[in-house]
Length: 378
Image 1 (cartoon, rainbow, N blue to C red):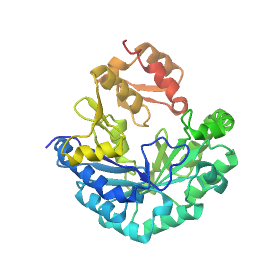
Image 2: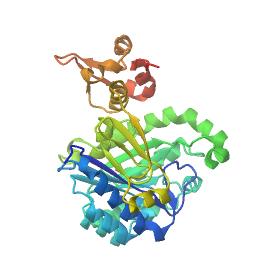
Image 3: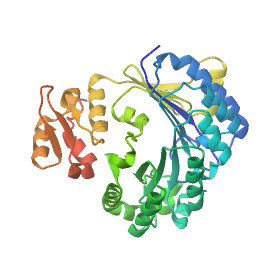
Image 4: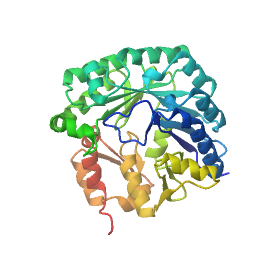
């Protein structure tokens, strides 16, 4: 066996493709769900040797994993390795008592619900099919099935959104008392039908993003949530009941750990190599039916690239990182300046020290990180 402890499985099927979405998705295709699960399990058989005996996390993302036909989803979950944390993404309208029971009995321990917003008119802008009542119903259904680790996704910067809408969304989310919240700036790729339809309003929203960001952090911190990563919050202290409620799978990414990805468009980082399966469903299934690995792009990750990525991702966290792990990627002159400006904390010790962004530095985020990075060699 290998030593990779994180597994990502991509389930691309959706009932509808939202206008702002840039993930690898396939609309409908119910007749192909079984063949796709067959292909996933064949890829796991081919690549699973890199996994450790004690897999730490499994994450099923999409797409809408819970749109996958129930029989095929159950078959897939039953064949995946056991893990300390098994997360599945779900759209609220797909959550029924039957689905919740299936997930619970097949080893899922954490559910990430895509709420996005509780404002009906903004849900319409996003082309989301779930209503605010669907979100509330999904949370209660999951709780009734025994789930005690539920995450809600919210988006801000939606065309037509006001600060009062964001306040209302945060209040609605907090009323459901989730263990975890992910709050993301809306990103719409240039040239998509969404940006064509909402270009001017997206530009206006971009000017409001900084204020929205601070509003999210202040509100969730005030409600007892730990701001442990740029866009992610979990219950902390007494409210966490002694549990560490951070998303362990995503922590693996942010700490630069290797992971195996299965499915169309899935990315793996294994043995200093980044592999990305091509996003074609027919070609993926055909290759694995033939007993071959799917077509993929492969990029070597040299030490300099690894150090830069460790620095960029590690600074998203509220925990300190060892300077020695990233020293070759770090502009030490810039580090001194940013410490003096109160944007970076540096604690010296025998291992070269530890650094992290201050609260003010975290709000500036990418700007501070780019200052800290040495220029990449040509």
